[in-house]
Amino acid sequence: MNSQNDALPDSPFRHERTQRDAAPQFVLPLVVRIERAEPPARTDALETAARAVLVLLSDERSIGEGEWAGAVRDWQDARIRKVVRRARGAEWRRAETLPGITVTGKSAQVRVFPPVPLDGWPKELAKLQVSGTDLDDPGPPVGPDPAAPVLWLNPDLSMSAGKAMAQAGHGAQLVWWELPEAERAVWRGAGFPLSVRTPGPELWRELTTGGLPVVRDAGFTEIAPGSCTVVADHPALRG
Image (tube, rainbow, N blue to C red; front, side, top):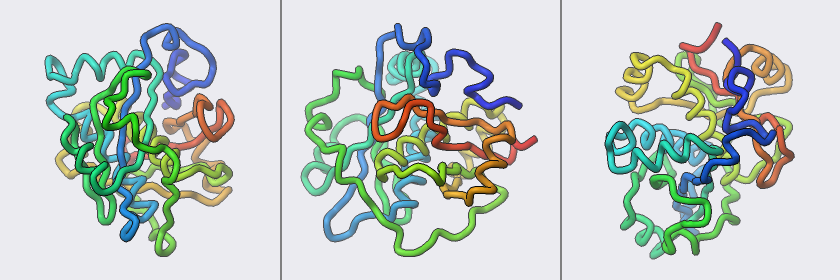
């Protein structure tokens, strides 16, 4: 199976200009809770953000005639943009009053909201900061479960936690698109188990040439256009 970027000339994750750029542009807002005294672990924040994207995509409000479905369709017809902002204290409480879904990990909380126009953020979210999402892990992450999906991050790229959370979300979305309905149902029923890990150079080379879905960043922030940021691995997609 070819990667999403190779298979679809107008993939939302290509850096070249495509017909998607002519459509109205939307963004998927995600807000990560970062309290000064207890910030989340980096890997858990990345995994929680990826699950949050999947929870929104599979929510009944995002499908068919659901109240968010039109915004989700418009967003997916254009460039797939995700922006992660941070909140604490009263900022987080205000964010929770807006329509959305909060997903909780081991130490992280991420709230995902239905897509909004690129220049039409709700004021409660627009004032939140994008910077300041630098997070650390208390120790090296354990090896991923080989029976569960893994979102592999490019070991040669340096990304802030916020940028990496958005990229993990892109990878999770690619897997969702590629899976047949039956596999989607199984994954959703299990609570969307997944891992986000950084492979060594040799494994990364194998992953990028193995036909799995690949995210190539458009280069709006932090990294060069066309950079391969994530390889999305799911047991059902392995050749």
